[in-house]
Image (cartoon, rainbow, N blue to C red; front, side, top):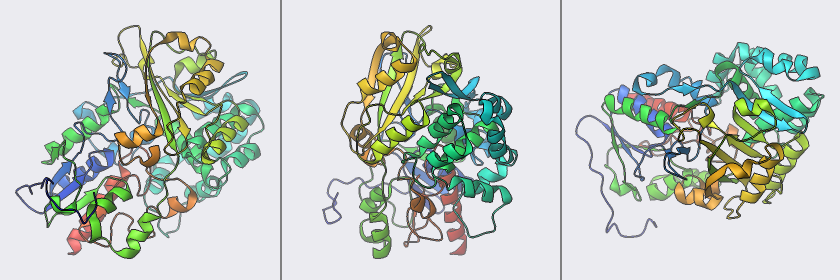
Length: 489
C-alpha cells in the first residue's frame, strides 16, 4: 500500500492494557522467540499474524491427501535442536518431541552413498581414504561446538575470536568446490561436503560457502539432524504456548499494512523481510537506512514438491532408507553445476534435490503403511517453471520405481512461495542472499543490526544475524537489543 493513500478501511490494532507495549508483526519462530524474551522481562507483548495459523516458515498442513501431514517450508532442524536459545526453554513441557533418524543424511552417488552419522568416527570410517582428513577438520570444531555455535549464531563483533572460531573462519571462507577438492581425494567425501554447502543457495565457487558445510556437519555431530514429532508446527506451537503462559497475546488474521494501525507509543518489532518493514513504516525510517535496505539482495527461489506415497522411497543404497534427509545431486561436479546454473538464472536439467522422509520415523505423519516425502530444489527467483519432471528424474536415478509409489503431489513454485509468504521475496526462503558481504552486514551496515534509526522500530527476522534457519536466534538477539534500549531510555 502506498504511504500516501488514505487510511480508509485500515484496521487499527488496539493497545493492550498494562505496561509498555511491544507489538511484533509476524508469528514465525523469530517473532515468537523475541516475544518470549520480552514477555519474560515483564513487557506487555502482542504478536500479530496475517495468516489464520502461526508459524511463518515452520508450518505443517495436509497438502496432498487426508491424513498426510506435510511441512510447508522448513522440515529438518539441525540448528533448532542445538539453538542456544531454544535449549534454554521448557519446550518439551509444551509437547515438543525431537525425532532423531538413525542416519542423519545421505547422498547417493553412482557406487553407493556418502553418509552423515551422528558419530564423527562412523562418518569418517565411511569415507575411506579421506577418513583422516575428515577427522582433522571436524574433530576440533565438534569438541568445542557449544562455544562455536554461541559465537556463530550472533552478530559479528570486532572481538578476539577463540582458536576454534578462527579455525572455522579460515576454512569457512574458502569456496566449497575448491575446498572439497583440496581437502578430500575421493568422491564420497567431496559429494557429502558439496551437498552440505549447497544449503547456502550460492554457487559453490563463491567464498564463504564452505562455512555452510562446516556448520551443518558440526551441528549433526553435536546435536543431530532431527525434526519435531508431528511436523514443524509442533515447534511453533510449543513456542506459542510458552509465550502465552508468560502473559503474551497472539492475534491471527490481522494484516498490518500501515504503521498508523499500530499503537502510537509501542515498540514495533518486524519479523518480516526488510521490504515489508519499509512499506509498513512509510517515512519513519531515515533516508540513508532506507537506501541501505533498498539495496538488500534476495537470493534464488525454490520449487517444492510434497508427496503422499504408498510405500517408502525405494532407494538403491540401504543407508538412504535409514536417513532423515537425502541430498540427491550426485558427485561434486554435478552439485556444483546445478547450483551454478541457478545463480545464472537457469533451470538445471539435473537439479540438486533435497529430500526429507519423516514418516519413516514418525508414524503421525501419514496413514499406517503409507508415507510422505518433502522435496525441493533451487530455482531462479520468481520462477514459475514446473520442475516436477526434473526432480523426479533425479530421484529415479537413485530410487528406480519411485514414481509408482506416488499417490498425491502438491507443488509450490518460487512465485507461489512469495504469494504464500510475502517475506519470501522471489521464493527466497533464506530471507536474503547468503553472499559473504551480506552475511557480514545483514541487513545494513550498523553496529546493532536489529535496531533502526527510529528508536521504536526493530527488525528480528532472518534478514538479521545469524540469518536463515529455524533457531530463533535473530528474535532472541533483537529482543535483547530492545531491552537495552528501553533500559537506557
